[in-house]
Amino acid sequence: MELFAGMRVRDLEAARGFYDRLFGSAPAFFPNDEEAVWEVAEHRYVYALVDPARAGDGLVTLFAEDLDAVAAEISGRGLEPAERETYGNGVRKLVYRDPDGNELGIGGGPAG
Image (cartoon, rainbow, N blue to C red; front, side, top):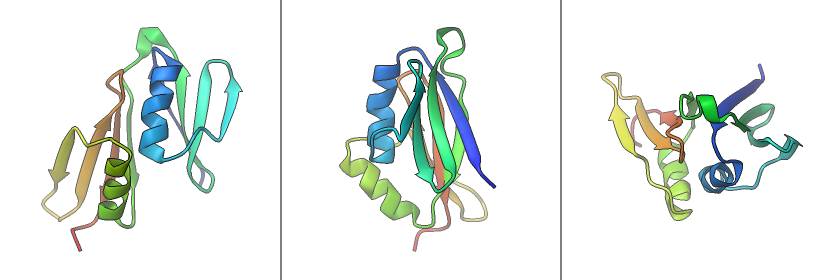
């Protein structure tokens, strides 16, 4: 399967700053002047779309094989999770919020 998940934002440049740091790279491509797309894994993309009226309502969760390594990389780029959750089965989730309040979670298994 492939994935193309979007986050509605008010300001594309502000969103780019956040998502560039979160994903550790500049966008893979720009379909138009109001959209930026990051490839988070092969054939899996997250995009920011300018839509001020509906900005901030996004909710996406990605899963990482090594959540601790991903968290350390993101922290090294200056972002910290807004929340950390641990579920009864040991699965953990880090919640990051962009400038508009969109939630991008990164989940993974129990700490090694």
